[in-house]
Length: 94
Image (cartoon, rainbow, N blue to C red; front, side, top):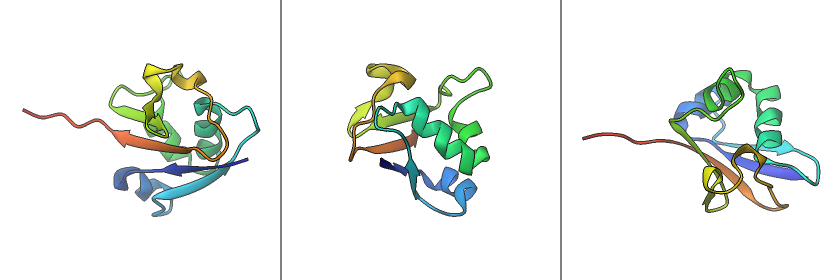
């Protein structure tokens, strides 16, 4: 199935300027599968989403539709057909 991944401008720079990237994953795909497919095409994007241990970087939030994956099953969160995956950088300030 095809999953659309929406990237912020800072990551789109590392995906050939694309803010929206379609990736092909299997029918029982998880967030981890989507990120792996995205990383295969754009390794610099993948390195900015997950760290060297394979965990989500703490300043990156990944949503499946409107749900933040950390509040669900983390990288094991299922990605249903037709869902969009959003990668959003955390905003901090004072």
